[in-house]
Length: 139
Image (cartoon, rainbow, N blue to C red; front, top):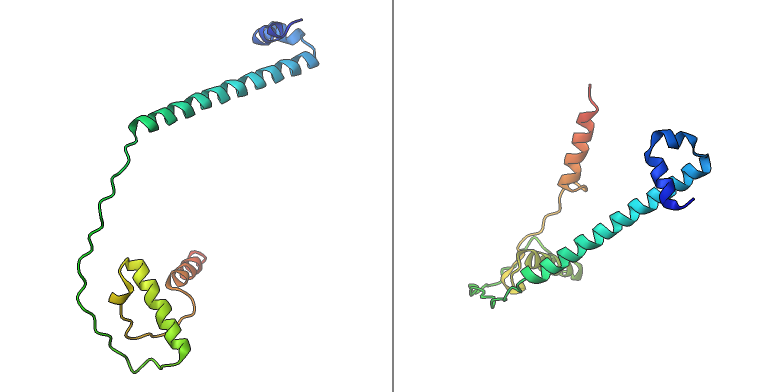
């Protein structure tokens, strides 16, 4: 009995009742492999079409030279609240670098005048999440 015969017999409910369990399992295996093969081929075709369309539609963006406005001259101002120890100077340098990186500005234009420690050890978003969690459990 050829494999095409098994698939034809699976299509007819009357013939399927007469099939043995091993024939039914073999037919199910053939249908599974055939379905996976068709799915894989269609996905490859879609992938190829997307790759071709990307090559046809993609136009490289010409980068324009970045024009940065001239920053006003900055005069450093020292704050008496921050002591002059090496740890504090390193902390100021790290905070200044982080602010300059997040604002995408040169570090020379940023001046940290005052550093105050927060009274809470947890960040604000963690406090909000904790309060929301507690509020959701109230009756």
